[in-house]
Amino acid sequence: MSASFQLDAPDHFTAGAVGSPGQRVFYLQAREADTMVTLKCEKEQVAALGEYLGGLLARLPAGPTADDKRELLQPFEVAWPVGTLGVGYDAERDRILVVANERVEEDEEEDTEGAEDDPDAVEPASARFAITRAQAAAFVERARTLQRAGRPTCPMCGEPKDPAGHVCPRSNGHVVAKA
Image 1 (cartoon, rainbow, N blue to C red):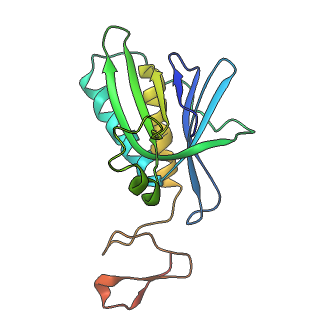
Image 2 (image 1 turned 120 degrees about the vertical axis):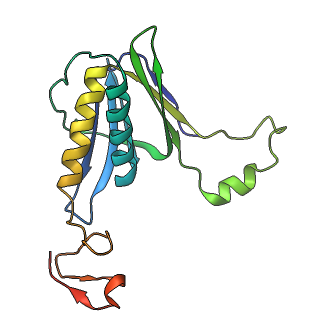
């Protein structure tokens, strides 16, 4: 069973990528005191979280501006891969709650189906980060920067284009212009 985490007031919250475009591995990272949590995630998860946080911030009353942009802290060790993300808002504490749940492999899911009554059933790990609006604003900017640093997308199909060219399904399989 993987470890779960709860950071009620992290001093660091960011996303980052390691590798070259097309080969990048994305991470979600937070730190509070001596606890640093790094989770592996998908590019789409970072983009969706950034977009959602941006919309949430737009609906909230004006608050603090974004703190400085944050890079991944080194060295880091990945705790587990992210399966799902959720977001909530704690108005009492003026904190945005980001919840990441561990990705469960299909064979593990089959083993746990019908295991509600099994006291030994393994629950996926979770990580809960209660971030400030300033941290959320910085995350939104960071997510957008990571998206812009990726491969350009094909104007016809929206798929990423490789440096060697792109076989676009909307052009009957013909290679379109190089990136």
